[in-house]
Length: 302
Image (cartoon, rainbow, N blue to C red; front, side, top):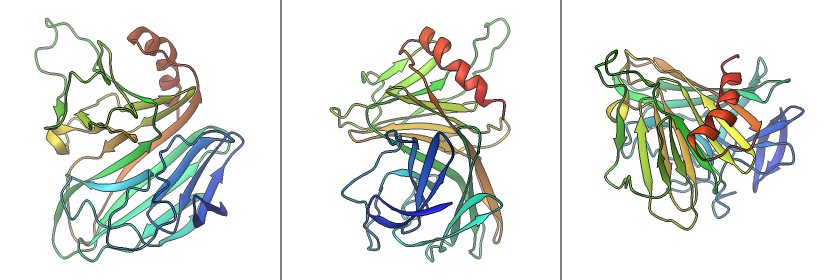
């Protein structure tokens, strides 16, 4: 774990191996600001006008990867993270822990482990109830991806009507979602959302993704997340464990853990596995099956 100045934040931490790196700041957050191949472009979005700013009473997106609480409500979800974060190296992990927000009583922590010999990162998100009463919530992990790429999530496996009569999973839309927007591709086997810097209309969709993966491709960089799905659990937003959001500046690949009633002193964890690959991935279902699915299969062999 290396200390360095990055993106106008003087107190950052870097983890790296022979191929890739990630950088988190301890000046605000917890935020992972950079995820990239060595010498490559940042797959996470950065907002230059916000980098280096700390303190104040205004919530800032900054960019990168963050931990929220779901369902999305104010002020709890938008608690300020403009202040320094405690950090330590614990058993090979980078551990980032901000102070508990006095208004919500919810403590956050992100633990990060980078493999030495694979382009793989394990990210453990923890919420702890430091308040005096139960709180119903879900951990919500949001990766703000750099513009100009495309998100891919799988459709549920095909099954004949003769074999399966019940629905496979919900597809949830928001009041501002336009399913005819050209950035969407509603394929037979995959749902795709493109980020377009010329289109400033926000779009969002959520799904119950039992296959437990989502991807973002940009140029020849491929970012894959893996995460759990519990078919018996209750999920926020009408049953979503995967959500995609885009606007003119970025695209978010979001995952959610199950809803829990968190008693005082109790904690809940949500784990993501991140992988980076180099590959060209075409835009139709056949190309995704041929060029992306073999990479997804490799991520299942942790």
